[in-house]
Image 1 (spheres, rainbow, N blue to C red):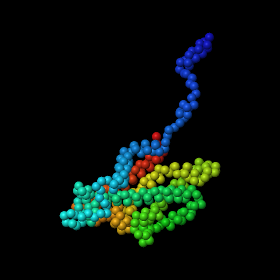
Image 2 (spheres, helix red, strand yellow):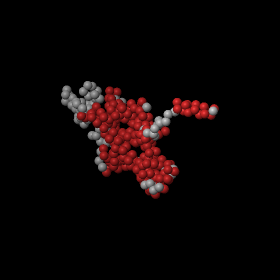
Image 3 (cartoon, rainbow, N blue to C red):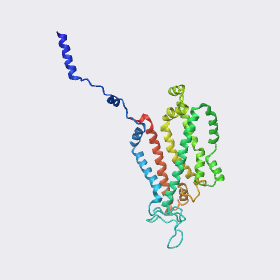
Image 4 (cartoon, rainbow, N blue to C red):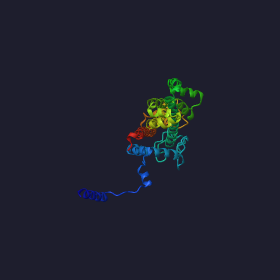
Length: 322
């Protein structure tokens, strides 16, 4: 009698607390689905850093303005020499005013248009060298680190090229070809990939013999698929950091080469040429603007890429994702 009452009471409790749910295939799939996205999570982590987000907006605006600046109204030509209407002579070292916003240089050229033209040139050099460094460096470094047969020949090639200073290569290229934008890009690209290739190779050597890579190899997975699917995704953060730093490094190297007289000809505006011209006038207080304005633009570009590269590398690390 007591057992019947207990069972009846238990059934009443179960009916009041629990209800049977019918199986729904769509709901089951939705419950087992994760909407995690690696790149979306990377972006979310990146934008949490307010400084990096501000610099990203700043660089986007600066690059867009640099591209559209020649097409804006009332813009002057960067290579044209302007004449003073009163003296009928070159408008040399004219201070900044409403007509010449950044003043003129020592031969009467508009510094405003020359700075933006030089920024376009320097960014073109930096982006071209950075893209080549990423493509060649990652491909060669991945093969160098994973394919053991290629380790010795690529190491020998690396040792030969790495021991030749880039300055010597640029001097030889200048003798072979005339000094130009293409000459500088080719000379930088000849050795620019070495650092990225060595960096990728060392990282791949560390992870190439892990269990999942050995299992993929035993199953007959092609080498290219193992590299692109198993190895390179682990290196995204450090590779992006190297790519971001390659652009300001190339621009800084162009400035240095122009400073020592191996850069672009004076007829091609670049941040290196502008800073080199302003450097000669820095001791004259009234003419320091010719150094200050291009130095500010160069500092903005290099610092922005450096900070964004470091923050993006941290954001690309899955351990920092939520």
